Length: 223
Image (tube, rainbow, N blue to C red; front, side):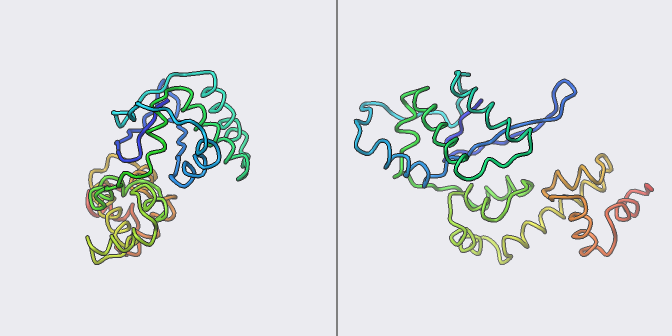
């Protein structure tokens, strides 16, 4: 279990282990949720003094009973294919905040630091993460912006819309991977950020007037 601060980014490599598929669980703590928690639970309470926030962007968490219990309860919903619903999800997020605060007192100034500027370079962020299967709203959130601000800032770095830019970069990368002839069409579709191979095939054919297998054959001599 790891904690990643809001103003940092990391490159995550997903790999299988011991013959098992990669599995992971990510939980975001948006600032509006943290602000609401602070207002309801901590505003009128004594706030720990003389403690600085976590210095490292990336912190490994101890496997406390509380954290293990929380994650196990969430994973159970996933394994059973059930949607916990908004109310239960909000309760789980609050439980996570409480567990973190009890784990390390330095989480207080880390989680409730509402005054630091979020200054993620948008061009660098998008180049690093365009292969992630995220919506535009999620790209905006992860870059520390509202969707409107995200679109406005995007116009400062390119004349393309965010959606058009993402499609262009993903298809450019897919072309190179097809020429290398190392990955299957399905693997390529997911690795460059498409939700399904069918979506990838449709977008690719629209651009090249040929399917990915046809493009590979014409560029590698492979059938």
